[in-house]
Image 1 (cartoon, rainbow, N blue to C red):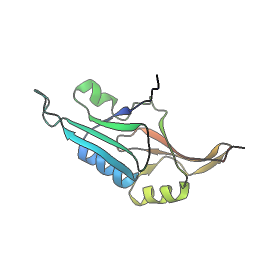
Image 2: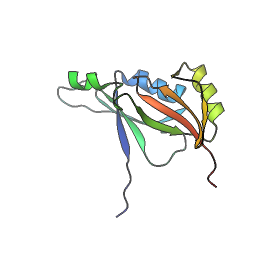
Image 3: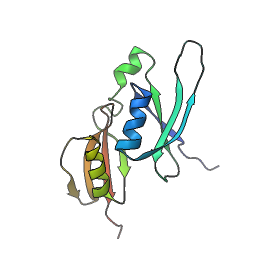
Length: 136
């Protein structure tokens, strides 16, 4: 049986702010934004975003619903890089992200595996923007 990870939940404070960050700042596509009418959970939505043209996994943006979830916002990787955004146009993506105010934690650097820079998403989770070197 074939399997794949369909989505990864990312806790956020506000749906609309997170959608704007991912679609404008990172250039992602809004795949779905469906209201979920659940008793006791007003305003709950099913929001998925993914890099434009990507097939496979998406991010499920989930608004924190209780104090425990609120405490985990921005800490889903325990302070380490949590997600890796791979690109074929590092400098183009880096410049677009800078223009939209994405916070970078360092200057871009060359590593044996590629060009990389650490940035934070709207919630404070750390990501790598990475363009891998061609495999030999």
